[in-house]
Structure formats: structure tokens, C-alpha cells
Length: 187
Image (cartoon, rainbow, N blue to C red; front, side, top):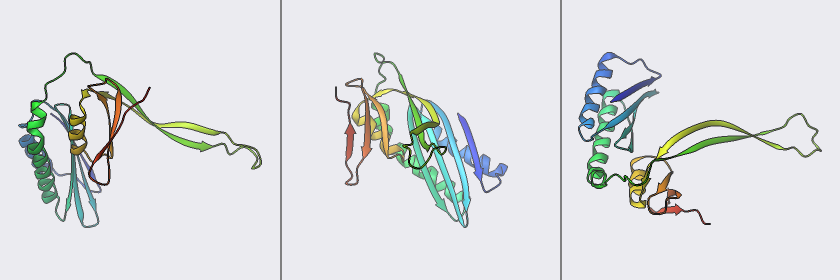
């Protein structure tokens, strides 16, 4: 397992690193293949925040906890991740990989809008688009139920996925009334 531990506004000690590594080894036993674990430790005034992102078996799991002590924050976020894993382990293991459909990839770009400042106020200004951030992610086909499970595991407001039933890109989002919305392309 590839583990990345980052400390913000604090110095990481060897004892804290080994404590986190031992805690992540417990979580690693729940999965066949843990690809990556990103740990971010942050200190803000009197709050010690621990945040962990796991990429395992094609599933992304996120947890974040804060307390007065960094070790207590790490324990709390590990407990939160274990609870999520226990909750969804049967559902994750029950799904069989699809050999017929290939992994697809999509490109994500963040665009900022800049105004052209060299023109007179009375002239019409064209809006210039500039790509600020771009990333490529692989997308495995999943059903809507799998997408709902994946959205529950992360703290993102939406999930873009390839629908296994239609082979089209869909967007799933959480609504305020504890339901989900699904955006499908119409041709």
C-alpha cells in the first residue's frame, strides 16, 4: 500500500507516522487490494484534524475527524473508516467485476473566466477562458446502486460515473431531502 502522510502547521514525528501506519494496516486487511492512502494532519488553533482518503478495490473512502489531541483524531477517523467499511463491505464484495465492458476515462477541467482589461469601457469585452486545473480519472462502469454507495463513501456533492446499463456518462448528486438525483444525457 502506498501511504502519503502530510502535516500542515505541524511537524510529523516518527512515533505519529508509525502510529498511523499501524492503524492503516488494520484497515488494509478488509480489502484485497489497497492502492493508496492519503493522510492529511492539520492543526488549527486548538483543533487537531486528521483526514484520510483511501483508494481500495476501485472504491474511494473518505473520513475526517477533529479533536483536542492528534492521536485521538487519528483514532476517531480510523474508527469512522472502519464503520464505513463494515457498512459497505458486503455490498462491495458482492459486486462482480464486469469483464465485457472496459474501463473508460474522462477528463475533468476547471475553467476560470478572465476579462480582457486592455479595452475601453464602452467596447464589448470578450470573455477569455483559461483552464486552471485538469485531471484524468479512470471510470469503471457501475450501476446506479453502486454509484449511490460510492457517493455515500465520499464527502463529494456529486459523482460522475459510467452507467453500466446504458454505457453513458451520468451524474449522481445528493439532494437536501436525503434522496438522490440522477442526470442522464438525452439524445
